[in-house]
Image (tube, rainbow, N blue to C red):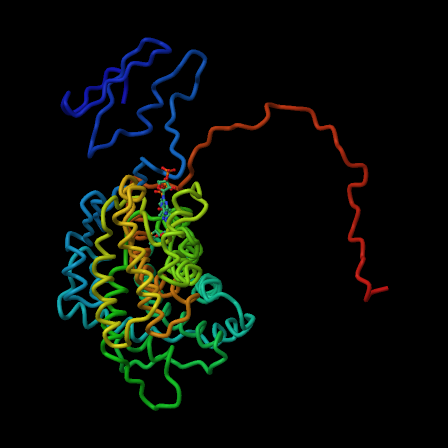
Length: 451
Ligand code: ACO
């Protein structure tokens, strides 16, 4: 693109005058964006590099072209490969959605049968992985266990490093989707001090997961069908969400051409944070702190006057500026699950929090609506999952999306290793003048037990 290059149509362009030089540039607009690299031709006096865009946290930067997930945040729309999330949640299965995300089309019966067969066949992990997990302390966070065991799988499948081979990509994708529930369940059983339950390949994906988590002495686990369907729907809702923090992490790490086990481990690490997948856990901590519906007005006041220090967890979203469409489905699901297990005080607090927040100017002005995490924690807890396990459930589901996005990134000819620029704000060159005299002071052993 040069100063004189003509865009496809004069309407689809941006005319910019660089006041430093008086030069006018015409930058093409395609798909609602300008190319950041087109700015490089805008050079001030003595500037050799050219103009750059500064966008901390990618507030207004598209980092890729993607055909997987569509979100319209203003109108609360979420679609996977064009299919509305509401229809998928009502009619499909998680494995059908996982196929759809990766392949772009719904599977035929033959494709689906084969896919389910492969996923089911690969649910077992190497016995050494089990021993690896046993090395953790009893109070290890299951997300830490999941993250490190997924990273460890990279060492068990050295062939997976050949990410340019479609067959290797395929088997790695199958292995990851198949083994995540096994690793998650092993982490759960470890924390509880319960014996490991191996996969039961007669069961569906979700039933098998529940069996590995909850089975005790019974020879065959029979899951509560309301819980099974609820978890299937929650997995579908969490399967992908375009360029969120963890997907961006998977793409960025994967762009170095590392194997997918390592890239997905990076996604799990990103998801662990309380501003991302950890929010459902934070919602329950918040509700516990509020303790009683009568304390809600004081809490809301604290949120409004706390200058961002206290947040209403499970509210707000970078993209959704209306009700998160997933939260609507989750709320309905919560009604169904609570009809089975009974309403509790915490759900009452959540409902009242939502009611007050949705009618309060502070939240209305900032377009803060419940996000997917607001009610999921309550459902998970009613199914007897411990709080620190909620994000693990999210990770199991999101693995399908991470892998679809990872492969799309690898096959995208425009993508290169992710490497943002910075605005350097540090010192100019200065002379080294040490403040220390002893460079190798060693360890001063002050332990009274050792002489
Ligand atoms: N409670 C109170 N105020 C909030 C909240 C909240 N949950 N979220 C945003 N705000 C306020 C901010 O303080 C800010 O106010 P100001 O304009 O007076 O400074 C304004 O709303 C805009 O917020 P930002 O922080 O700029 O919004 P951003 O897009 O950066 O953050 C985020 C989005 C991180 C999700 C934020 O809303 C948040 O922290 N929410 C709570 C955590 C949460 O629920 N995360 C789950 C997200 S969904 C997911 O990851 C699956």
